[in-house]
Length: 109
Length: 112
Image 1 (spheres, rainbow over the protein chains, first blue to last red):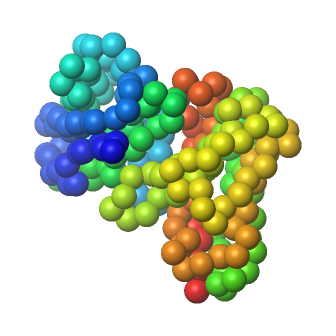
Image 2 (cartoon, chains in turn brown, blue; image 1 turned 90 degrees about the horizontal axis):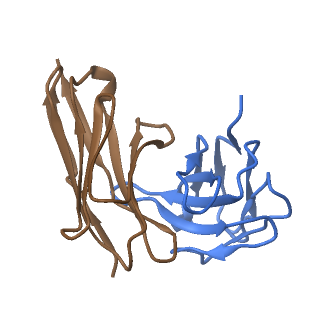
């Protein structure tokens, strides 16, 4: 079966750095996405990785290792507004997105 | 402002009733999707459409139907609602099937 694993919840301090991990087992791989979802709102696109390595976009970076079935989202200089759920999704061989359950990130002052 | 509009925002529905959730996008995206999101689970794909005139089944299609008569609209119909269909429903679209998806604000549906 297809499976995306990410921690259920993480806590970090304002101004710090946090890494959210995602491991996956899917039928085929055509890219990995990270989305941010604030409570009661729609998911919004953060990053996309299809090749191994690090993609940096401002305070957010995303890393991919296809051989290990592993990705992480790195958030730097955390702000209170970063409190949200972070969703990992993999596009499989049918070009459908398989979603993890999300990691709820709690930022404390 | 360009984007995806879903209606209604929320709805309480009696079991056995028919319900259509509306989704309209003005970005001229080719692909559109319907997901349901339940607590503790990832988004699950119900149906999708890669282009106007075509539709496909996702992971959890039973009890739902869709149509794609034009590029902009992608309604989702529950023919006879059941309590297990209580969920938050998100419509999404993408320029093509290999592009990032953009989401509407969701419809919160409760079936009693």
